[in-house]
Length: 137
Length: 134
Image 1 (spheres, chains in turn orange, purple):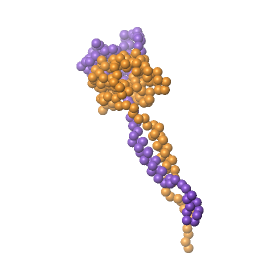
Image 2: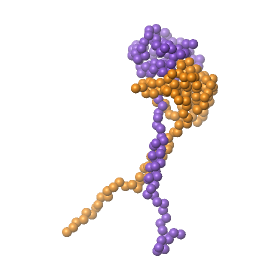
Image 3: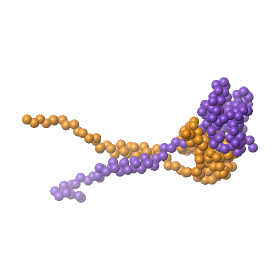
Image 4: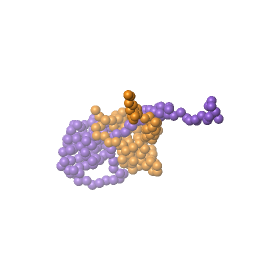
């Protein structure tokens, strides 16, 4: 006599909800993706060990400066005297008020350029700065 | 109307079997384009305009950097790598020590960052940036 097992256990991973899972992942990545708005002038950042993270990308202003004294903000070359004006208007932005100024300065830049930027930032009362650097080693 | 051979209504459905494939394709696109590069750097708070404070001379340490990258800590030359240890010592003696960093106009930025990094590594929280010598 032959006996048959009555309750067969279904094997195989159910794939019916696979699209749902994948869509959820897509939505996560779509929301978290922030496309870079601008590139700036090419700079070689200095190296440091004790680095802090920037809070987020939206409330950060980037200032690029290189060793020939060129300053770039938002993909535009600006005069040193304009920096405080730009920073002031950024701080007054109702949607994303400026919190931190990220200074991406080439490692070979002279301190006279850096201190001029400091001076301009102080005029605009944008006092929180972050010197962008690479991880050493 | 779509009828089959027997004259019955055919089931009208969008085929969903390839939905997962399409979704995966989109997922891979977003995975590739997402750049989670967090900017890192040395944080510092600049002094407000016109803000001057009287500080006891004992509570301040002067760090001078010249154009050649030599560092002078309280009038004695010091290697950049040794600043961390010296400042830690000083901080142990005086917890509210202010470190004043002064550079020359022609000092390279990377030396300044290197010195700041040393101070940060020594957990010096009160760092003051003086105007460079002209």
